Amino acid sequence: MGTVPPDPGLLVVGGGHAGLLLALAAERAGVDVAVLDPFSLDADAPADGRCLALLAGSRAAIEGLGVWWALEGGGVPVRAMIVAGGSDRPVAYRAADLDGRDFAHGFESAALRNRLAAAVRARPRIRRHRGRLAGLARDPGGIEARLDDGTALRARLVVGADGRGSQVRRLAGIGVESRAYGQSALCFSVAHARDHRRRGYEWLRPDGPLALLPVAEGRTGVTWVEPEAKAGGLAALPENELLERLDAETGGVLGAARIDTPVAVFPLGVQHARRYAAPRIALVGDAAHGVHPVHAQGFNMGVGDVAALVALLRGRPGDPGAADLLKRYERERWRANAGRILMTDGLVRVFTGAPPLRLAGRAALGLVGAVPPLKRLAIAHGMQLGRGASG
Ligand SMILES: Cc1cc2nc3c(=O)[nH]c(=O)nc-3n(C[C@H](O)[C@H](O)[C@H](O)COP(=O)(O)OP(=O)(O)OC[C@H]3O[C@@H](n4cnc5c(N)ncnc54)[C@H](O)[C@@H]3O)c2cc1C
Figure 1 (cartoon, rainbow, N blue to C red):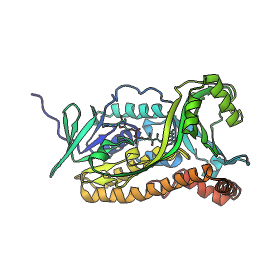
Figure 2 (cartoon, rainbow, N blue to C red):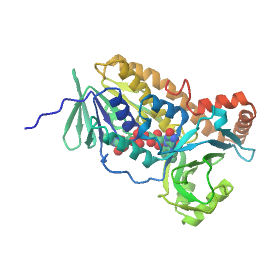
Figure 3 (tube, protein in one colour):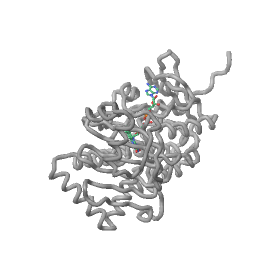
Figure 4 (tube, rainbow, N blue to C red):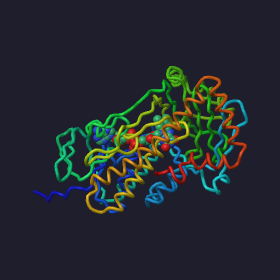
């Protein structure tokens, strides 16, 4: 019989964006870590049409975790964001409004995951397990995770990074508040004739926002929100007709274009776990919270979770599943994320609500654009910079 490796301190359930970032950051902080996912971390995930804006505050947080090297060069720096609240003059947010820093980095979702997975592979101390979590059992010394093939993995702390339908959350008996928006996001990337000049766009339309994000190889990621039935209809159109509609919605800013990923449709909803911790268990990323894609907050909130949890783990060598540590994590992150959820939910209500509300939203956007201190405040908050980024 071979020697059985010692239990890791931390078992991360879910090798998506949040789980892989946590594994890398925790290992860097000296925690013995393993990560579990049903999909192999040795293979690249295929493009799924979705793109993510990693905001300036998240870049700073990932640099602070010592993990930016994993993403360096993989995303496209966004130098300006043009936001329009209807037919009014759009508000341009430029790098100069942010002390010359990039607003965000544009990534295709699969490329971001693949970069993180490659970085995990390059860290041999991070153990990788392939399988699906089916059960959890605690004992005084730790916690045992049972996989659906009967394998058992022990740890001192299990972190659920297993997405919106989190099995960890369910097994921990943590409830979740959720609401569907009745909207879906149509997502795909396009190669196009006009240079994107590292500019992102967001149109806050009554039917739902439409965003363009510069991504790798001079291409652009499209996130186009519509009422559910309309989104399904658009996704079924032939490529040339879909591109004609996109051209009409965006005033032709991309020029002639070609779709080069699948056209995916994501039904949208908001959800928030009632708690982020239970004995020897914590939740991060979408397992803890899910928001509407307006203003690109989703994974960025997950980055804040990872930064907060790793700061606590680093400051407290010993038992990573200690009850007071988990309580602190929950206290810090639940409140911070509740504020973000309120903000994104408010934006959806204002810009897709009844006409008086929409008018008020457009007036507020105009005011923000015209008053420089308000603009700076809006940018710092929106980009998750300073307080509120991770606490
Ligand atoms: C249309 C759209 C646009 C978006 N745009 C942005 C944006 O611009 N900026 C932004 O910050 N965010 C954005 N988001 C949100 C972002 O995509 C998510 O917040 C992020 O991908 C969540 O990562 P995660 O790792 O928490 O969860 P997931 O990516 O869902 O990963 C969960 C992982 O857990 C694994 N898993 C599931 N069940 C089990 C189990 N039982 N056992 C083991 N493993 C399991 C899965 O295989 C998966 O690998 C957007 C989302 C959508 C839908």
